[in-house]
Length: 334
Image (cartoon, rainbow, N blue to C red):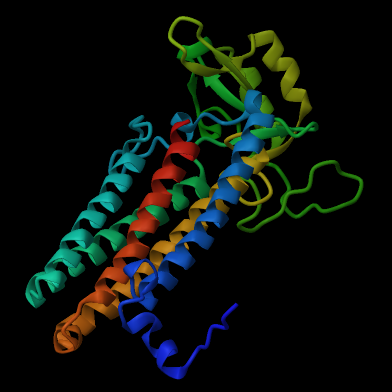
């Protein structure tokens, strides 16, 4: 059995000669390794989300009711429209990146710079859109109350599928005489000043509910129309609503890592963690593309005779876009 001898010359030719693994450069190979490892990370997040959602399927929020905002269209119900637009913008930025890589193969510096600029612009628009979506998610729209058992209750007008959610501000009766400075141990309700204090108290919401006979409570329980397949939340009768409001203990406005007005507590946690982690990747990709863009303008790659760095940046950008397609599918659509 012969022994294999490795010399310095052999090591130098491993990536620079005709024996390149998979016929790619060292830089591309390392980028593929990173993409593979990062893919497993995102897979773990999405699998965890899938198991959690399956476990709490009957009480999970309906995406069409949560992500229904559109810029400059206040009060218009536009379910998933803006998320779809964000997705289109990010996918289109992948197209411009492909064009930048192709222009680099042809050594066309001007076109590479143009398409890189459009890619960066698309990424910035997507990131800004995601920040706008976070802002709406955090501040909330309607408000809700949480019961002793941790269930979220919404307030609606109408019956069944046609019930329309209304905001707490539409019916809560504000007590002008409530003492916001009273923090004695003997009182059951404390009023705290500051950004963390709710706008309304449980008693004010209860008074508003009792004073408006057309308002009912909608629970977290998900029902489905057998004919259309449309999912909707259970609406209690007026009598059941009046009885159920007595279980309310906390007013919930917007969302944070502890609770959210949309439904199950872990829904907000997954939203912040998964979309935030992806947003960090987009931000990192933009920084990488900006560095590459300025090197293109300076003629660095033109002098090297290769735009391989643009191609390596493109691999990362395509990965970020592909991950968002899965996030969009599993988190927003399914």
